[in-house]
Image (cartoon, rainbow, N blue to C red; front, side, top):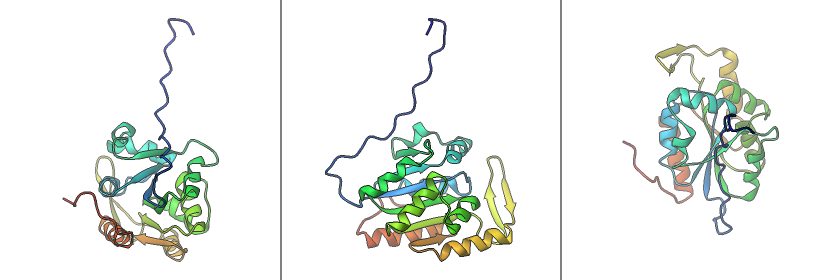
Length: 208
């Protein structure tokens, strides 16, 4: 490389492996898709939980900065896993018996459809599928669950009217083993409150 050629930026740091003394099933695996629907609220809830790792789809990495979230801003609170391999290599962390709960929040209608039909071609859908096969409870915050949905786009609130196929896919997802579907940040928090109680854990901070 000549002295006049620009230096290529170093790739963002990947999470360091946890030590051998890390307790089994001690962490939440929280997957984020390319939805901005209640994204801020979902991340705020995740930040109040103990021991959370974020698993980002490629679409999530595009959407996060639109809503003023950067990887650098998330790293102090979360370990980040990124969708950079064809075989979704980070899914292998599930086989280490590290995670007790897998979440997708928020989940796009595309992700909901794939999960409901057993398709897994992204990091979140692979995490969901493998968690189910391992009997790890899953919680999915589906975006399109009502005939009319009010969602915040980057610059304005938008009214959406999900199609019948999207609503039907939510119902299909409800029938999947080891899966709980929630429809709002309040329901997500309630589901996590119950899960924390089951695990004899507590929130790290209270809601404001």
